[in-house]
Image 1 (cartoon, rainbow, N blue to C red):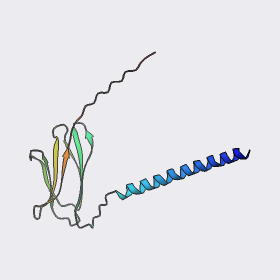
Image 2 (image 1 turned 60 degrees about the horizontal axis):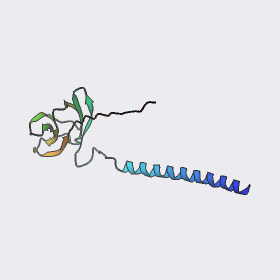
Image 3 (image 1 turned 135 degrees about the vertical axis):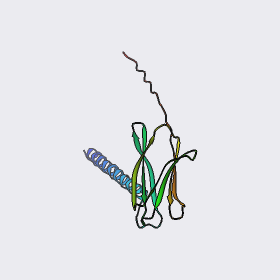
Length: 145
């Protein structure tokens, strides 16, 4: 009887210990993920820009451009293809710029997003986007009977 109680207690302790370890690992991994997030502060001395692909709509790729411009000075956004051909160019003055751009899908395998300060025409930040399309066929054969 003592052995059965001892085994039951050891099993319960073992399950509690495993649960504790799992929660501890979850807490540590969550903390590590939070440490890797990018902080965009509008009072920062260096401008912060982000370009990301947010999906495809119909026959177009959608890119979101986010730029923190705390001084509100003029800047230009230029989008070029790999040959340097300008696809889009516009000047803005927004302090918190956040716009989405639709570009034809499967037409460009490389795009360059360039943010320039209008005051001295220097490149503030630039991003190179490489795109590729893959078609994957999956064939599954199942034995019947």
